[in-house]
Image (cartoon, rainbow, N blue to C red; front, side, top):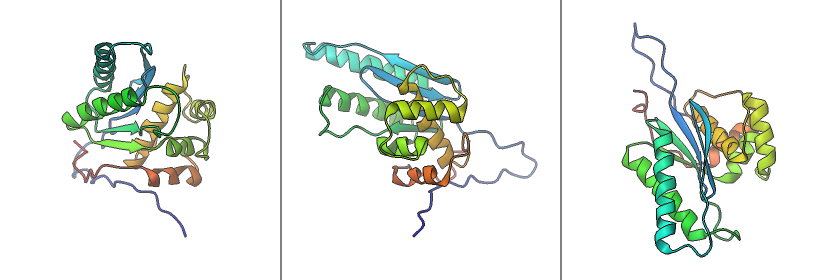
Length: 199
């Protein structure tokens, strides 16, 4: 059985109108230590440092700072493609702080009427490499090769792939990908955009 890739078909431009503009899509790889952000202007990484014995107030301030910086970097976009939270069963890091940061950012995006897509990490890896089990180094290498980008970190590579997935969903792929990669879009949580996204 063939699995179809979900797409939004943009409304045709009115007669006499200029060429349809490109959608503004941001990709976000949210992390306490280094959030990757990809927009039409390029990629960046927002690093912060914390300590295991930080006070509750310090942890709260760190989360707020990251969220403020990320949302400012994103700006005004038609879609934010956000990597979904890692499984709570995975060891390491601060589960509550990571979840709090993720929700802070998603809440702010939705509060600004920016539609949010949630991309599971395995779908991001599959879209980039063809394998949902691919490690970050493989995603970085694949992203640099496919998009011709110089990416200083795997956080930025992940963000670029997430942005590419959002553009693909909207019918404007950043680059051609094999069908086996494109099926990764099926496993994502896409917002119901209709045609209202094309402003």
